[in-house]
Length: 145
Image (tube, rainbow, N blue to C red; front, side, top):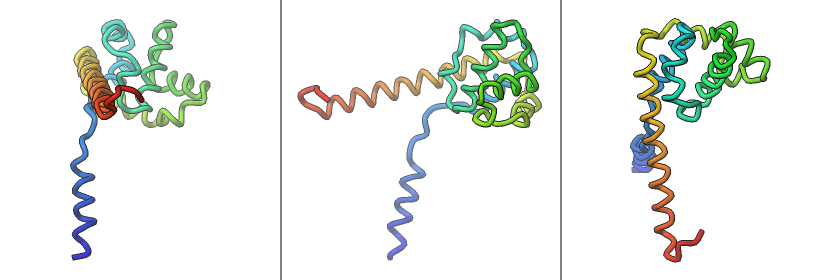
């Protein structure tokens, strides 16, 4: 009987909702941008670094954006150097992770679709955040924090 409590707790943790995201789309977009730097122009207006769910992907995307806007190449080598110069390489993963993103990308041709998926999931997370804020206000009858 003593084990039923922890099992219930573990089950409750398993039932917690996971915020909407697509890690695969994030990885494929980053890899696609490194494979084909000219694809930046196709997605620049569709997605921002804030749309990424994973913090390391936000850093990598921001670095790709910075290099692309300067007309510089964005590949695992140049991104590693850029991130290292900002002290962000460890937080972004590593040179090995950047290379894995490129190697595991199905196609650079689909970056627009990946960007739309990422942006859509980010909008859903923002809707959840706003909904939670509204629910929090409803618990305060006077409407004050």
